[in-house]
Length: 196
Image (cartoon, rainbow, N blue to C red; front, top):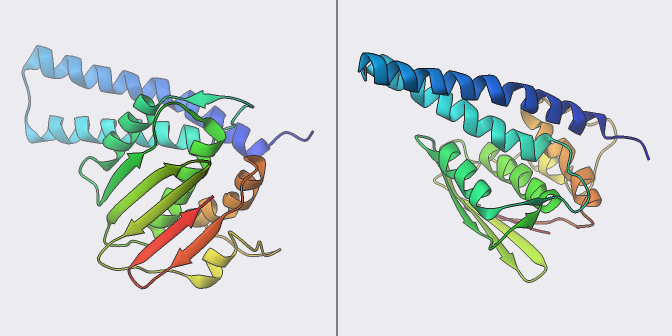
């Protein structure tokens, strides 16, 4: 079996960055304790470090390698989504109980990034597990959907040119196949729904 080099590279980058980002966060916390400086500059640095930490944890699951049978705890997912949402344009509702297979969580997180791309003014993203199926929905004040790009998730197009900001769309077909799932998309004027 050929290794998924892109996922391994994602795992390596996230693994190597998570420790220094955590160390910076610890350093900022120590500075605020010793100096007592809680001014706007320190607050901005602290918020930036927390946001970077949340994003790298998110990316580690979404873009990293997922081993067979590997599980992720609900508390970890909730922590990542809460930190990612802090001060942002999106609110995440994770209505999935208990620990979940990493490959299914990976599918959901990549789809959530697709939804974010379609909501330029922000919005709400819901994830629900219903029996054997997962359902994601997104709504916001304005939807901006590139139909050709979204079609590539269910009908891959050879030679389609993705931008770096669209890599999650390019990964969806192979990630869904690896999880043994089939993606179904529904688009209304004010809502997006994905089931797998």
